[in-house]
Amino acid sequence: MNHRSPLITHVSWGRMVVEGLGEGKDFKLYPGGGRPWDWNETGTRHSPGIQPADVRELLDRGSRAIVLSRGMRLVLQVCPEALDELADEGVDVYIEETTAAVTRYNALVAASVAVGGLFHSTC
Image (cartoon, rainbow, N blue to C red; front, side):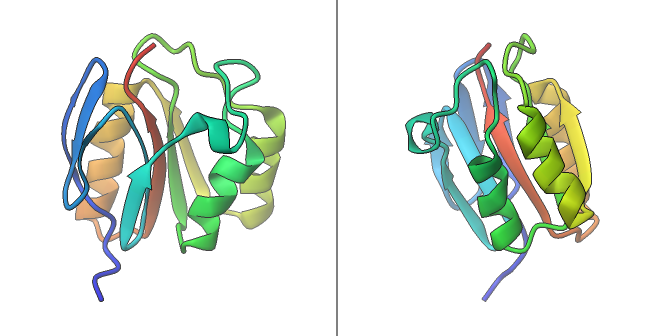
């Protein structure tokens, strides 16, 4: 089984393409795969933002570095409890605008890092 995280091959407003997963708007990616990111599952909203349960899934799937995208216009927040969860696990965390986050994530994949990420392709 391939445990490399999937590359993001395209990102633009409202559209992402992920290796092996196809096209979508928002994604949760982790070593060995990923899936569309449905905010309703964890009650995620732009504010207070990314929830502990969102990052927990990435940690549970073996991510040792985590990239969190805040959207193209940096509207998406990251709630403090999610950051606490990541700090408790001692993983490297990168929080950036979506296109910068995609570049960082793909570079970590290329460096064979067990990286996970949450990607929001609109605001």
